[in-house]
Image (cartoon, rainbow, N blue to C red; front, side, top):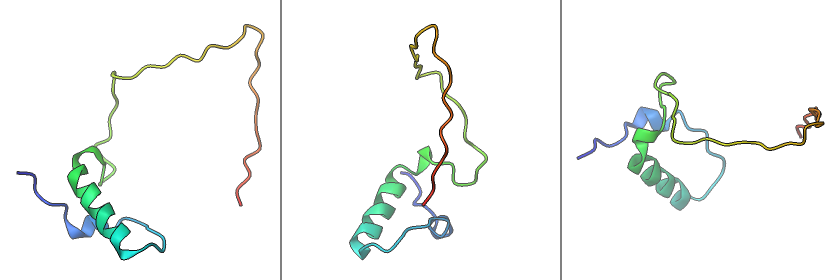
Amino acid sequence: MVEPLKKHLFSKLEVGEVDKEIIIELRRLLNKYKEIFDWDNDTIGHTKLLKHKIIIEDNAHPICFNRKIK
């Protein structure tokens, strides 16, 4: 049996104004999959399970976009 997520970890979350039912479901979901989150910022690693390739034309150049934050 997996130990429930400790309450102090939920306090690290920043959730906007949503219905209480959504918060309850979020907690349920986070508790169910708690082992995939890095709650202490020290256990994140890497995987070799996923690869991707970006195919571009030979004469393609990088494009820089200005980041607009509202």
